[in-house]
Length: 149
Image (cartoon, rainbow, N blue to C red; front, side):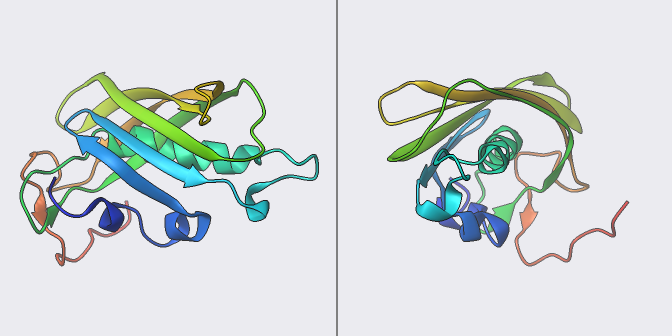
């Protein structure tokens, strides 16, 4: 792993409580322990939380970096989600896998399962690696971000 999985998700992701538990080239697993803040008025995990988990897992699947201290950055171009079943408690696992693409743009698909292995949601998306992130070597984590395009 290029850096600790904890460093992979910051800001909004930390606020939700997501963290990376497995990460290799082309595949990632992101977990979230369900808390009351994640629930909608019906007592189920809010679809926005599930969409965020899928967005993170599908994107990160194409951004793994093996060089310590380096990272790769990307952005979501499109994301499609399908909500399959409710989740109310326990741990959710989002698994993202790269399915195709090239150096800049790649496509991923994945799913979210609960701790019983039941399918909660699935999704697919297209993502773009930011400049300097095309290579699996990435770039130093402290490098300034490129201007918004």
